[in-house]
Amino acid sequence: VLSWAPEIAQRDFGPVGALMGYDFHLDDDGPKLIEVNTNAGGAFLNALLARAQKACCSEVDRALIGPRDDRFEASVVTMFTDEWRRQRESGSPRRIAIVDDRTEEQYLYPEFVLARQLLLKDGVEAVIGDASELRYDGGRLRLDGDEIDLVYNRLVDFALDGPEHTALRAAYRDGAVVVTPNPHNHALFSSKRNLTLLSDPAALEAFGLPLEMRSRLAGIPRTTLVTPDNSNAAWQSRKDMFFKPLSGHGSKAVYRGDKVTKGVWAEIARGGYVAQAFATPGQRMIEIDGAPAPRKMDVRLYTYDGQVLLAAARLYQGQTTNFRTPGGGFAPVLIV
Image (cartoon, rainbow, N blue to C red; front, side):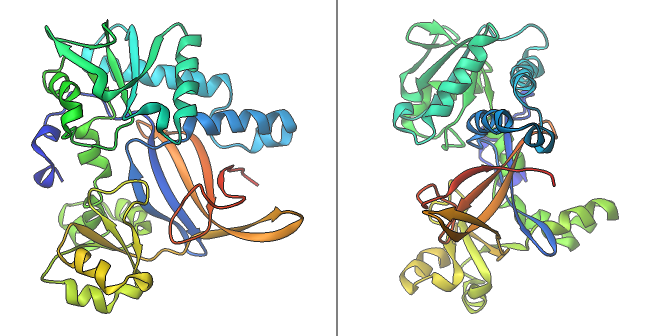
């Protein structure tokens, strides 16, 4: 998969990526893994939601998936320490910067505040900063004049290509700061093009993957790269497909095939998209103003180094997940 990754993603500095997100649709045939995210949002908000649910009744505490309360907090602190030591071998980061573009304008800014509070509570100095305000000189990355040891990266510029990310890009390439998740993590785990291999049984067999592993990966809907050469065939089968941009994030420019106009298709047909077999989302009934209402549902597993830290559902209406649906948004996942 690194063969189609950008140059900056080729080097492995050690970190495996903080708070990965695996998104599933659930149907009668079992879970379908539709996407992998290296900067999955919502974990800290959902940990707070789980705490509120636990306060409601003890049955909820027993049914929640993943660590709760102080155990989630301890897992997060350990995660950042592990990421640091994977690159620096020993010690702990003194100052962590939670970084995004225009942080206070981000929809999930409240969880940046929660993450900072969690780290401060454990004695780790933590700050929230705009990536454009980072400065790199003398082999040190700084924010507001203070040296940064580790960056919790929430940017969606996965290759750090933007001119406003020049300082972070240079510091990362020089190994002057630990960045997690980083461009290598995204290329290895989260690039949508990777799904074209993970969902191809013949390719997996050719790679020598054991049958048991290939069976587990069968839950990934078949995904193919759209090119000008195969665009006519893709158009004919579009009604059974979702089209996702290779460089996209957060459901932006994602199209359900049976809703695609010819104008949009002209853009897709030029390339830069994958076509993923449609996986029906689950459905749950909720109550709005005293009346039952259906909502689509997906499930996100927040993980670190292959271990589940937390699970959450997202309820929505429309083609793709969103936070605009009345009665939608995050919801707890319980074992019953």
